[in-house]
Every structure is written in structure tokens, then in C-alpha cells.
Image (cartoon, rainbow, N blue to C red; front, side, top):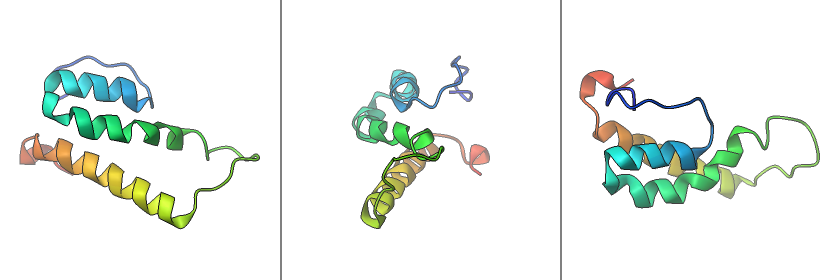
Length: 83
């Protein structure tokens, strides 16, 4: 969003962030919709409590999806913006 001079507020809500990205590139919509549940990883496991820890298959699937989103966004940006 910064590359496209699109203002945004600080948030971990991937629905909000994804919506802003889709306004820039509508071809991201399906992937970003599928990634929306990853939002809970920003807070759910951060604090101790009675929250069940995800099993290894859920963790691997979530990480793979996050990497898909990262790759999709990076392919739409100039190479000089890549980490």
C-alpha cells in the first residue's frame, strides 16, 4: 500500500488490509479472502491462557498460506522493494 501511496491505519486485521490490497489489485481477492483467518495468529497465541496450540499440520498449512500471500504481493511489486 505504501508503494501505491494508499493510506492505511495500523491493524492486524487481514480483512481490512486485504480489502485495501484488492482495491489496488483485484486479482488478489480470492487469495486474500482465504488468508483472512490468519488474522487470529496476531493475537490468539500471544498471551498465556486456555487457548489450544495449533497442531503441526495446521501450523504448516497456515505458514504455507502466509507465504503464498507474501509471494503474490511481492510479484506485484518492483524487485527493489523485495526484502
